[in-house]
Length: 176
Image 1 (cartoon, rainbow, N blue to C red):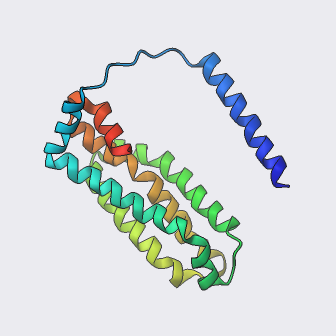
Image 2 (cartoon, one colour):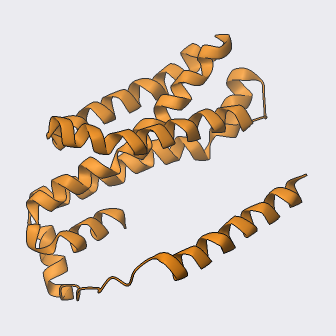
Image 3 (cartoon, rainbow, N blue to C red):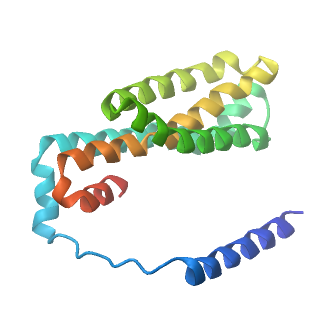
């Protein structure tokens, strides 16, 4: 019953909100740089290119997500997205958990980002190729989710190296 699931989400949200208010310590916020300084970051071509890469990576990952239902209807003659979305979401969880360790271990966020984009592309290309292979058909969705969710952290590291004085503004710019 979908209504019970929604009430469960509401309950979890309330528990999370109360826990945040009660248990998280107050962290002082530093003043953001002036608008002129924030816009000046775009004069650094490296920042502009990094933000554009994030923009296009997001479009490529989430763009397909938007059209998943008609795609699967055409490829697999199904409108039931549940297991495909589970595979994508579990991949996203895996990618977001492991990317920090990979960045710390290899210390080459640009190389990791290039690999993420290549693997993301291959996983999307493999969807129509592997869609008729019983259990394996979910693998491209898992990998797609993992790469999509892992793509943000290397970009943040790259931007922090380019703009160490305005790191929070650079990361915020990338996220927006």
